[in-house]
Image 1 (spheres, helix red, strand yellow):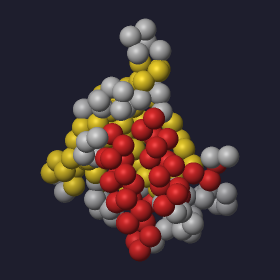
Image 2: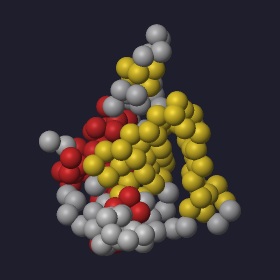
Image 3: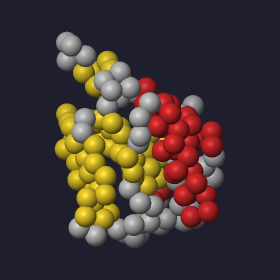
Length: 150
């Protein structure tokens, strides 16, 4: 499972020209689910994302988590994070999980994140054509892969 985490001052998702969800200060998380991913991957990544100290304290040092600042989270499923670009110029998505695994794992990820931050996690719609907008604060962008946790 792969995440791209961005510290944002705001982020939103539009579907069909209509605002679907939005947040203020917090984290925009893109979620890529692979065929071999498990509940353990999901829980490890959710805990890591919510405890990551990437928000500034009173002295401007990145020393606070999204929980510490009472921030919001917008999580959007993005299968293209699973792309392999080793050969040729067309990315391969052969490692991407199918709907039968990816949808429940994405939904579980969002629910578990909600329990960790103590508030609703805003979402996109799995498989929808979405327009994602964000203001990356910093910019701060972190990529985490559950396969690289050791």
